[in-house]
Amino acid sequence: MQSDNGPDGLRILAGHNGYAPTHGMTHIRQITLSVDGRSLRGEDTLGAMTATDRRRFDKLMPRLKMQGIDFDIRFHLHPDVDATLDLGGAAVSMALKSGETWVFRHDGIGELKLEPSVYLESGRLKPRATKQIVLSGIVLDYACQLGWTLAKAHDTPNAARDTVREDDPDLS
Image (tube, rainbow, N blue to C red; front, top):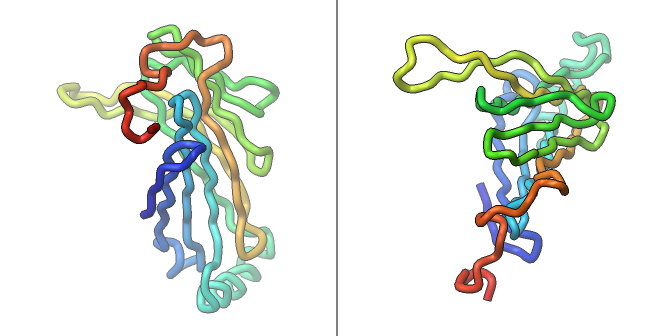
């Protein structure tokens, strides 16, 4: 995992190769939180990073009838979030109890859905029903990248956490 502060905000790069033994795939996620905290930009990559991984991928594709490797990226939501699919499936709008509205969008590479999920809460005997954002794609070559954003809606007012503090040493 790597992280750095830049002019665009805080960037984190992380990944794992847990799919390499079976599919030849490594998952890498890069996320950038804007300086004002109003947007999170992400990119997920599934790729065959080494020659060994590419050979494993090449061996797997004929068994999959050259249809590729299906995958889902899941973002589980808190039960108090009221989420709806918008813009013909291009976005998910999320209304919070605080009155804030956040919007999840993607670059159009994958398919966006809202599906049921559960929330395991400390002190409760049963899980609470909730939703999850699911971004689905297919790896047809040695790599597939999906971009997405989670941003506060433009008409959502600023809150105290949206302002840049003058005493913040990282912004000097």
